[in-house]
Length: 178
Image (tube, rainbow, N blue to C red; front, side, top):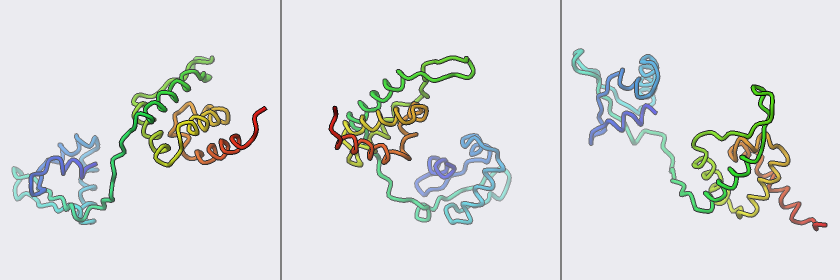
């Protein structure tokens, strides 16, 4: 996160001169944490720090882009199908009730803010992996039957056991329905 702040404040030569206070405020950590993080980044060769000669001249940080451990990141485009699946999953969650220890009764499950983007991303991952929408829906149905408490938390909570649910879908698909 600190590297991102330094890059955002950098000029065309990747130099930036934010104060410890500014970096701490932007990163929402204490100044001592910033100091230690800069030392670690210097040790790894990601940043070169030039100390100011006087109090009025602050430190200058030069980000060494070539030394950063960057991988080939690809942006995931969310398809309309993934969005539809996310909204379908949301409607599934909203019909579930969970027991509230606080209120000592069954209440409608609540969904955390930002669910659309998170859930659509998970659905897109599954679509990209080659699962058609019908199989994803069937897998989600099995997940709700097997462990509704986990499934209510969202599709990201099903990632670990997704292959198990897909295997169950394949078994159901092969069995004749009576």
